[in-house]
Image 1 (cartoon, helix red, strand yellow):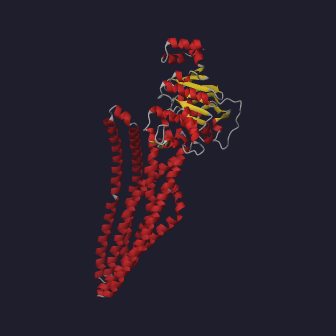
Image 2 (cartoon, helix red, strand yellow):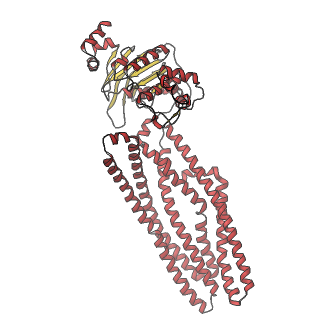
Length: 579
């Protein structure tokens, strides 16, 4: 938690003034027993009503001043805690966005969501308690002990013994609690993961009527969380009884020994009551301390989880300045590229090819052959293990990340639309994209025919994930989004799978007419890539064929087998004859 204390520097006034007000309130509280002692020893003993009234007014003034200080501290704590939480979430989110796919895969999306929400909430609570109670509670304990010494040094040793006993109990409980809260938060990640999977895949779950199975799976994870929570609760539940046992024993000793001293004339009755009041203040303060131990134990576990994210450095960092490019260099060049995911076998082996500017590359192959992996390396979502990947003659590692991504318009295999207007989805926050560019992109993507009928046009609201659109409409909007960015390289990763053949053909024709764009088309349909300038056939991570459609029909058995699943022998013969 000490590392996260840097966020408090933005709230120096609140962190200073808040505890100062609480300290002032605690001082007022420590004065109260002395005033009560005077009321008993002087006012009650002498029957002096005026004295009792004056001291009563003093008690009211102390209470009002203490309340004012408490309200100011509460305000300061609220502002600081919410401010720290806001800044911490912003920094955490910004850091997560710097991580590459590799780090996000390792951490896991559900864990990241839990840490940016639940764990930050724990830190917020700790900051509020830091300002409100961390100074007040210990000061009351120590102050009450000191004030008791001014009344009777011998009886005050009871206070010291009670505090030593309580601290001896609190330390092991706190140590055990940290470990349990870590496990508890980790199991909360599992709940987030299953919840996220079920909500995003609700249609699949219901289509296969697996609601009962998913409910049991959720219950098992929730039960694991419950066990850790109950175990942690049982351990922390020992704090309050342990404190009250020590405090009540101290009460008995004070009343017993104080009564003996009062009978002997060593102590007045008011002072005995004052000692009891100070013991009460100590007991209440120690209960607060016990709760603080629980809160800060949770916060310490959450802080470690948050710092784990901050300590995760991105494995992919862009260059500081733009690299030197060459006009006569290929638009895309792969040279003996090898790549494997964490703990997996080789996903790509020895991939080499070049693609000139303005040309179209088709990529085809079976499931798991490495088609999307090839695109991930080109966009530098992952770094290859060996070999080189170049754009315009410069290695992708030499490009600033923002520049590289702006050069490439990607339409991913899984279409993702965001909640907001159609215009916001097309621009993704960029202010340099005009409505004319958007409409031109929509027309090329064959989406204009249905977007013109939408209520509000470009201001039409898109639901989260595009749930108010069909699969084909979402794919066409994703293609239009990539085109509206005016990229040098357009990548279509199996992005026409939901389109009918006629719309797919119109789309490919419109892309050719647009011109000036180097295209990479990944598809399971041979018809979608047959007119490409170059086709790569991938099989188990290896390029088993590179050439045109007609060349591969003759030279690549894998490509021919794929085509035979989609064309008849006669159609293939006609295509070979056309070549």
